[in-house]
Image 1 (cartoon, rainbow, N blue to C red):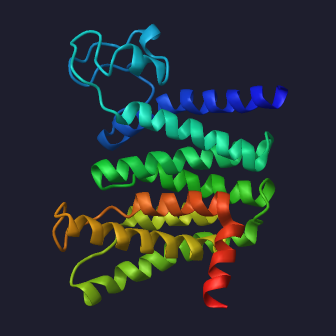
Image 2 (image 1 turned 60 degrees about the vertical axis):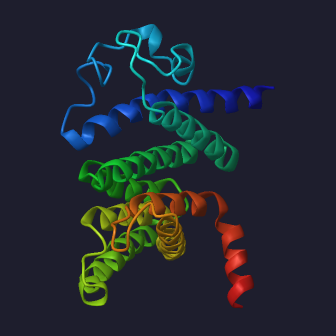
Length: 257
């Protein structure tokens, strides 16, 4: 029963922090402070009352509408809260309730913010990736079992591999294929997970991105040459490797060995 309560608390903490992540997603691309002013309706700009600021439940209570103006609110708000809560729950289940879990929970939140911002605005702000590289390196050096050398190589391989791909993509595809934000995000991922994980994540993200691109073109949702944000695929690959590294290695070995 005590363990169940801890799991519930981790989910609740993730959902509550997910509410703050929504503020970050809305304000960081616009260069606004994430601290002040208080949250407000994106339509009428009326401040959100404290009793309407309960994660997940407020969206249900208000039937996805602003209390002041009655206009519909984006489904992104409860989705981010739920995903962050589920991520924290998965971290607790995989890594326990210690300091390692705190590191990986912060990593999951950073990935979520970067993925959603890239999906909505086609950018990955430096304020997420660059501090994440520093935090990931020190966490790997002193807390999680990656080690400073594995983290350092992961940073170099993550950023360097995408930098090289961006350098040659104009000659291969006739246009730029990746942005600097993707390079910094994969460098941050390498800082937290190490260089071996970078290789797996790059393969998973590239495969998933190719499948998604073909599917979207087949259903005429995008045209050939349309830019598809790569950050969400990198973030998804990182989450997959974080929780399923052994299983993915087993699949890889079964396919190629």
